[in-house]
Figure 1 (cartoon, rainbow, N blue to C red):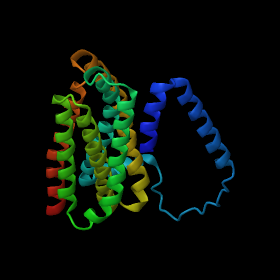
Figure 2: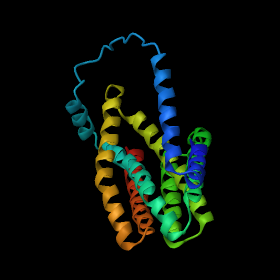
Figure 3: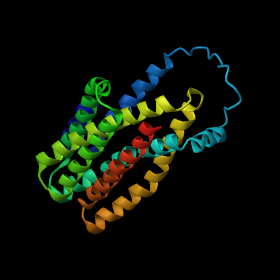
Figure 4: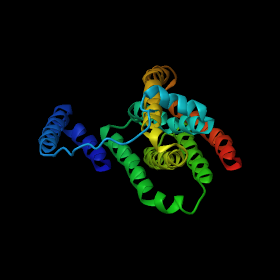
Length: 247
């Protein structure tokens, strides 16, 4: 996926958008044909008590304030990821005065950060406390975003994208680990859908507002907003996870 980001930027710059569309069409057709070959397994219904409604899932989360707080904390990296995708193209074009190749490589750098997260988090999470990891990655993302806000260098864009990709992916891994430890397995699916649905609902308005703000104040303004969100994450995680430790 991260290689596709760089390749797409190069193809777009030298051939145009039509080639990108044709490649997408072909890939989706291949995927559709592969799905047809998949055999469906027989579903064995689980013997679960009468707690299957979505409303009961919301009530469960609301009764457990720690789970509610950690779940809301997990939304912040999702929102920042979406806002980063909104701001990055404008930033590359208007602040860096660069082309789609630069954007493609910055997208690749973000993906490399996500890949690194998957490779190293298994080792880190077994040695370092969840609280320390979460605070550290929120802080790292905040520093990277503020650097992009005040800077205007292509290499800084690459490095910042890598750090943000690493931080956001790592935060999702660790926070979801905390949730899996705290949430009853019978409610885990509904709790996860609640966080993701809430994040997507917020993103609808946040993305639109980010676009207007970037047009009015400059494409780098979006990175300042994301910096503020990550600082909120630092403060929030310090308070929420302290309660978890005390409990």
